[in-house]
Length: 623
Image 1 (cartoon, one colour):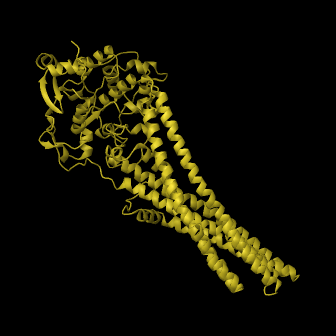
Image 2: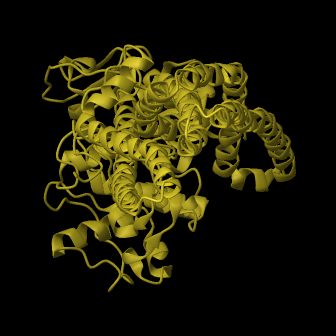
Image 3: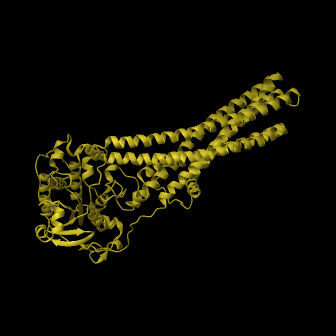
């Protein structure tokens, strides 16, 4: 049995939910067929036991010791065979469930990485979470139930043949009674699935609400909005609970029907069989066998109902999965190349000169973000990089050469050292989209602007040159860095010094070896911002675009970061989107944007004198 998950999940058939499920089944056909074989054996052995018991009872009534021993031995052998078949069936059922579930997870994770910023624009956080929480389980269940479901069909057919060969009336009764029992519970399935879909929808909305609250918890505490959002969450949680109760009501009726209806059939078969026994038409042993057959049929019949339910749920879940798999990213790369040079956004008129520290100050922050997105190829735009259109370059090359680092980038669980340092061996190629550890996934915008591939992941693929020039930084870090070699240690010191993050490392118990909690929640907003800046500086891309890199630090730290950043990026193409006068005063060139277009250009001091609009924006309207 192969280990899971598979290295390559394959290319799915997403033309329809049924084709996706069939593709899944074919991907694991050997294990599926083997499981069906063992499940069929397991059911058949149970189907034969009533006949063997009936023969044993006839041997007792006939006082035939030899026949009794023979049939007892056969029954013992069937018991051993049933145990073996049951163990193997269960093992393969678990394997098939896991194989289908893992494959679906791999496909959706790979597609999420491929879609990037497109995914959160099309689907809510709760919808994506629901796919991971429930849909993969339903798809796994649809593979698992095929084993027992197919075996139960074979068992019912076998029992029907035995009963017809023994007693035609009883055989026909079972032959027509079993399908009628299955059809009788059919009307309950549609309302059940409708209520389950509604519950899933509400659960997805609740997950989205929870994610929003957690992401903005600091802001909520700052404005005193915790109670308001807690009340909304409580209200939506009650709606989910009520939807769950409505689902359970139908499920309880379905479960009861699965007991009552087969019970009615058992009573009818037993009653007719008893009348035949009293009339002497069948021996006592056959009467017992008929009763046991009727009892046995409860299991296969319930399995058929369960199979209908799980296959329907799997079909619906597959539809939601292929909805994600069928999406195409808004931004795609080409096959061109560029030697680099001037980076220009034609729509806004922003031009980033190579080797200069340029700033974009916009009266509306969203305009600056939109420019950064276009320059980094996170949205479509008429952007040129040197003599080539940026859209003509392969996307992995763009990510390698142009890095956009904003304040939504996350710190993931793991050692802080792994969060800040970049290894060329971690991600060998852009096409390798297999799941990775948190430490390897440098995401750009987990708030919904950039998903799995992340802007920071480009750092890994970029590789790192040797030691760069720049100002060496401060002390107090002895024993806290300890990288692979002296050059790496020096580069880390420079980046920490530039971002004024030395005090953060000094305060940690194990320095850079300290384990970071999820999303770096042990750090304040300003500390996270400085650590993100360290990570961006260590990447050292050809073009570095920073979006408000000092918005969460105090004025004193901001002034130091601005001065040190200007020194460390001398001769390197850098664009900073900010309206901070402390940062703007340290740049080589400032571009003022209003209404999404360039309105004025020059140095910070020149624009203060020549552009009232610029002065009002960067001074916040203060005299």
